[in-house]
Image 1 (cartoon, rainbow, N blue to C red):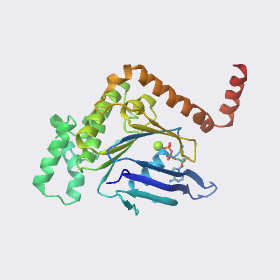
Image 2: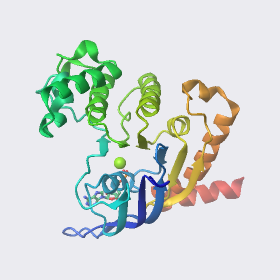
Image 3: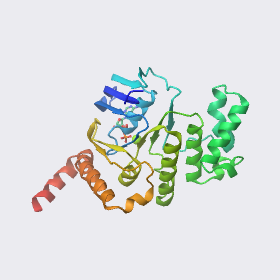
Image 4: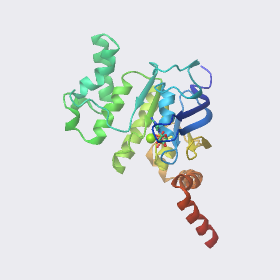
Length: 276
Ligand SMILES: Nc1ncnc2c1ncn2[C@@H]1O[C@H](COP(=O)(O)OP(=O)(O)O)[C@@H](O)[C@H]1O
Ligand SMILES: [Mg+2]
């Protein structure tokens, strides 16, 4: 494989006008590439086009302009087998047990029963869910339900995993644990990961590189390389170098967040600037 697992070439997304609403230029033009086996995170102000970027990268949405190249071929409007997606909202099926939730995609793909059993049992034990196979999602905590969703993606053996604010609804403690889980999954599967998050420390801790997005239409104002070792975990957060990267991310994002909040916030910040 080349040094580009997935790449955007001049990608732009414009949502057409609807009724009285003007068209929305959500994304781009943006060009960048994620390297094979890389952990790449995306941070940016709310509404800047992060979820749009993920939809386009998964193949689910065809961009208005430009191309997405995955493993050397352009995406054509369907999600290829090699890509798995985990969404923010709990996407488990409430009427299926944990085991059947995780088996769902493999059954639909027509994989034979013995192989399904092997892969589902592995994914469940990997995600610490072996004791909950017969439970229904409603009987689990939010963190456990999100593990089910990750297991459901993992079982398909994706080579590129896209996660859209997967821990957004979880408490801080669970978030930290899930971050370490995600690092373990990344190391053991060798998959390439693209994570969207609004938590700067989370992006910092987990990533090889972090793309910082501008206000809408989203493009990268900077891509920050962390240089962390592959066997990192949440204890990294205690190092001074870690704080330096977080400060840099915050400085980059601050002006964009102000811009995204609009004229009012912008004029207030300029007043604050004069006072300083
Ligand atoms: N299907 C759609 N039709 C029209 N506008 C959309 C659609 N999806 C997203 N948008 C708009 O595009 C912009 C970017 O949205 P989104 O990618 O969800 O942002 P983020 O995930 O960064 O918060 C927003 O202004 C949003 O309202
Ligand atoms: Mg979003």
